[in-house]
Length: 112
Image (cartoon, rainbow, N blue to C red):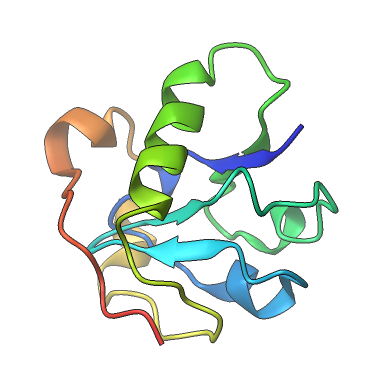
């Protein structure tokens, strides 16, 4: 099992989760984070840290697409291990639905 980041992270991109990750398995895209499923040790400490509730265990149904997306982009995007400020409109974007189709960017973030 692993944890995955879902579309609730898109354009919210809170980074509270990266501070607590003991194995540094988060990777930064332009407007969201992903978890490398091969590096995640299933400790679960990141899940309660996410203000957008975007991190879920891959055992929940319907997350196959998110597991694939996390695996793909964690291989392409830079690693992030330190907390950064969230985007200025993160709180406004929190709770919006269907963000994958509306806002997802495959562009990498800056990383550490």
